[in-house]
Every structure is written in structure tokens, then in C-alpha cells.
Image (cartoon, rainbow, N blue to C red):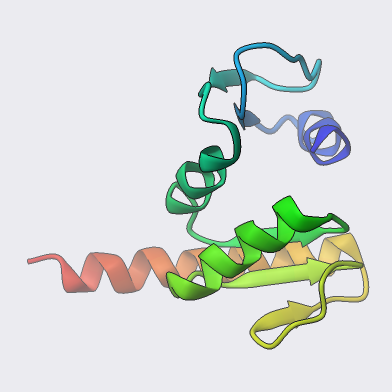
Length: 115
């Protein structure tokens, strides 16, 4: 998470971290939400997403990927779990492009469904 946030901040982006506990710092976060939820924070994180980029990761990343796929949220992956439904990308930049495109479609479809 720290590397992704560092890159976003270098591009003048805003970064928000929903962390599992009440302690822990990432110097590249613009805003920190200290959830105190432990592993349950993965659900909050994914439900707050229009698309997901998965890079590397272990079982926590796998649970986030599974949750996103179950909710119909696109997952673009770089050097991560190779499972059906994850868009395999060759570079982090490609993963971000795929996720941004998917997020725009997700928001557009959601807007069309709201009366």
C-alpha cells in the first residue's frame, strides 16, 4: 500500500487508507481511516471501491479479490493471485488503466440504475 500511495502522491493525487487497526502510519496517505476492524476492514475497503488493483499480496489480498469478484467489482492484477475473474496486467500502469476504465463504467452503470 505504501508504494502505491507514494506514486499517487508524487502525481498530486489524494490517497486514503482504511487501516485495520487504530495504530500504524503510512507517510504517503492524505487521509487515514483507523477502522479498528482487523480483517473485517477488507469488506469496508472493497465496498468503498468502484474497481480494485491487486499487486502482489498474500491471503488478505486474496480475501479482498474474492470479495470484489463476488460483488461484481472489477479486479486488475499485477504480480498477484492468478484466479478466474482477475484481469492479468503486465505492468502496474496497465493495472491502473484497466481499473480506472472499469471504475468509470461501474459508476456510469450505477448512475443509470438510479432513478
